[in-house]
Length: 478
Image (cartoon, rainbow, N blue to C red; front, side, top):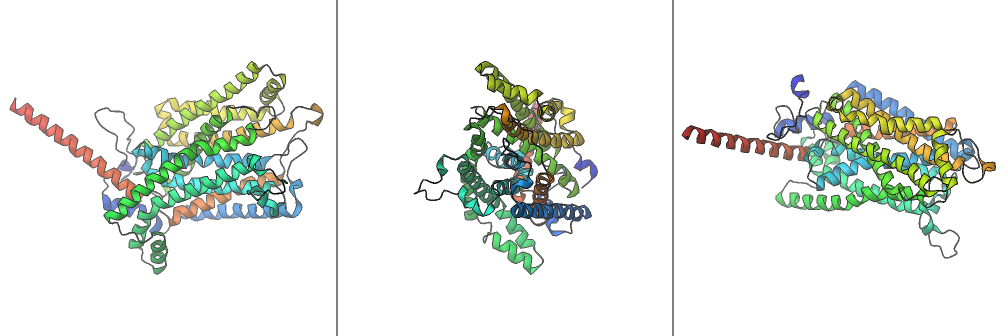
């Protein structure tokens, strides 16, 4: 495909003409060849470099977790008031990252937003891998990982552990349910594409592997009917999860009596922030991928601009939530609550709060301008800033509230150790290793959905052409 076609600007706003979601001179055959070619052909050299780096970083994660199990949580920077540190910060951060995938897939599917088709498969994969990274941290946070079964709803006949009153148990239900439903939704959408890879496979191993996971798909009318019904049902099940899972995670804080945590604004505030950071991570991943794997015709500027609009909207919601928190603290007349928020902005961790505001509130405002929304470099840098800001948001909420609570004599300063830092960096290695393997062995773009979008796009063009011809004939007769 020519460079001119790859850089076609489909972001125009013309009420008489619908912007195409697939650019270039594609037909059903070239769509299959292009998307399957990413899996079937030898990956570019940069993929091997990125995979080697990611795998090496993931190996450090295994080493730091092993050291943690051997030595205990004393190797972290935890102290007496700050019993929660980077482990829970990272847990909430990664859970938030996973929200955009299900929103793009489920909610936009139910609202028949066709622009989701170029990005939904990669976003769903991002969700699965982010939840894996998130689920790791509560398990290692308890220190004695062999007691991780305490998080499960065990029989409580001796009243030794009030699990159903514990937010940690709510997290177990929420995260596990979210992971299972998202995995089923992701896998269900891939079945027709896996059958395509099965039929195109040139090696016996690929035929067996893709044939096993395609579940005997033949593409019959009955198969398509069952597939569409199942996909719709899973989308309906996944939609409330998007709005509830991070709300449940926010209850870890909201049900506590710690100043700065005990507030009812956390559930909607956390959901908006999760969608905000999740869309930013989708952009961070897909902007390089569309260039490296030659998918610019399917992940177009229109997709990028629409995601930037969502980031602008949710970033503004997050900024409103920050202001509302300060208003609630002032309006409450509670001096302890007022001090908690003054301490966030002007205390020992003022620098973290400044980074949070700069990245989460100020940076997205650049997307009011279309030139910024459609500029690849600005978008890529802004998406990285957003994720930095969202991590610092979790840090500010947890650390500033714990290190300066009700009793000044118990206050202390929290600093991470090298184990905290390497564990967090290692989680990115795990995430990127999984995502790079996904890019290598599974279709990054939903082939069947893109073909349907192309068919509808061509159908609308034919209708418009027919109307134009009728108008011309009537004009000629007159």
